[in-house]
Picture 1: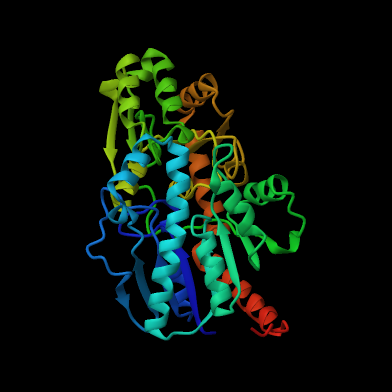
Picture 2: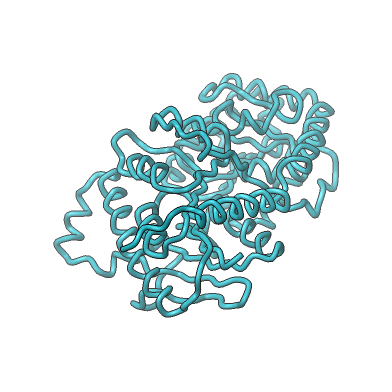
Length: 410
């Protein structure tokens, strides 16, 4: 097979769940003999990542097996004073919609410049999530190659442009890979999408665990949350649940909140309001190695999301034998069988979450059994080596089918 062109708005050195997914997939594709070019078009310049030149693109890795190209999508350097004033008074939704539109324009410009300079040919485009939908679809038509997309999320507010972008995307690609059945069902329901043959569930996965918990789970009160610190992730629910624990358990609790986000200061104020500030630690962004160290000490790892497509962080915690507690939304219900390999609670129900935490204090041997069962499930069903093989087979099938189509002349 020729080189695969992977497009993502999220990738290392600063990245979230999609970036982890793309990195792991790319590593496995290379192991299995694929040659990969990654085009990274970030949503906007973050505090951590800044573009160092005005060039349309920069190549950060160039080997035969793998090329990584940062497309310059830093629209802020292009804005006039008048445009900055307009953006400063717009609502969050409008700013996000504007950024989505500009991202696609700048990405396509930089991608075409790079492809023209490199001279490489490609078998297909594999886009990750919907932010660069227009750019990826237009690039596919320009190169006359098939486009597939992995849908990582269906979250959006009512009337947001990104929802219409997703609708456009699923109707203009050759195959849609969904990281959970929840997303697959959402696409069919929300967009009245009828062509089920184009929709495939390919779950998120993890690398083979190279470690186990060094000690059994103990009732030590070490509770971990890992995720974006946004309302949708529900860290506030966990803080409230900790405050409601019986005094004997509450005194033992040390809640570690890993991640950053827009409501971090609100959560710190909530801790003070509920008198649990001495028991809650905010780590900010830390390395994956450090995350695993917290997991290894944890009595339980909690994911109290209000919405969740499919959680890589939960998979990682389960892969080393942690006892995971999660809300009963989205992909969690596909990953966790309540009482068998973890615990589920009703989303937004603080009292039920509190009862789950108290139960773990009281039944630590059950928590240990849950952790071992969770690890077995991950090893059997959610390893990247197997997932990448499945994706390679999809590449081959799509490429063969696409090449058999009659080609339109221009």
